[in-house]
Image (cartoon, rainbow, N blue to C red; front, side, top):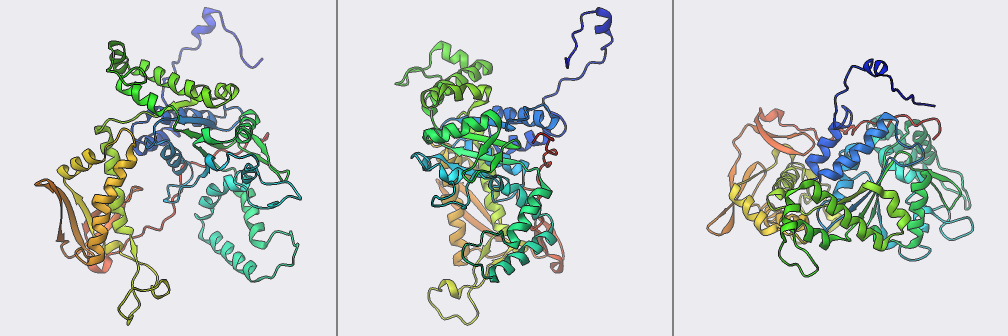
Length: 479
């Protein structure tokens, strides 16, 4: 027996040192803080994920199961897919290219379409092609994140790729190329790898895909069409769904019934009690899943069904700040085409445009007023379409106007640009930046600030590779 029962008071008294209760350990707390800052207002999803990561890091998770299988349910636009994206950025690499595997389940409704996920057997069309759930495919984002940290390794791989491109292959040659062999060796040496796999709009998937996921939940493995086995023991699987969106919105506003009557006294009391509200939202989400998924699958999810709640208008302000920060960072790192010298007037063709020229240290800088932020928030807030509507307003009011001003020459490199709302309209104004200042990037968010520096030292380095979060522990011997 791996545990011992203690009943004697003397024995109990020997355990005198009280262990403090913590939410998360020192390795997982930074992950929670990262997600809390990137995914606004969805605290329960972050906490559930970090609980699973804590068990995994401590070696107490079930060895034949994925790290986590979470079901994110709720209205469109409130961060379900964003949650998966930021999780992959936290665990693998904080890069603009999201390092995860995205599966659009609407493409796998028909019988037989599952071959795109697991491949086909020998003798059928498509045998030997790439499948989305092969081991190399799901490990690929983390593998390449590790490879890119070593420039020498990248150089060797690039040379091997160029040699293979020049070499003629005989018809029927099934031997791996030098490039593929190098990549396979690196896959063995650098593992294990985190994998973040998203089944988007899972309720639209066919029965075959549902059965496939049941197998992954059962033993953490999946047999591919070519006979190989993909192991998901270091994978985080996220299922997103828009079902129950309207019911969750009614519950959040305290309305009852299908027509949307005014909130009852019981509903108002529930809204003021966060614990009761969480239980009610969980029940709504679970009941909705039971209508479209097999009961044995819903039972396996347990408490990992997370209802994403619509945000209040003021809760969206941090998300608006993040969107504006991304526009400001784009001003710093933007690239734009330049015509070749001596080009004739007229619309240039693609072949007549040389490579992009980065602005970086000479970039324009973005400023906004509180009045402008409030106006964008009022115009862009939507409980029906979530943060997508807010992002569209930022594109329309900020990005598009900046693009026109830059392209027409009304704003030039080095300008400071201010967006304000006064007299009932948006006003964009500029002032040249004082000479002898440079723009620098700060942190992962791409925030910009100016600092005095001699013109000869106006340099910026945005090409450093991000090391990402801690690599997963070494795989146990049973894997």
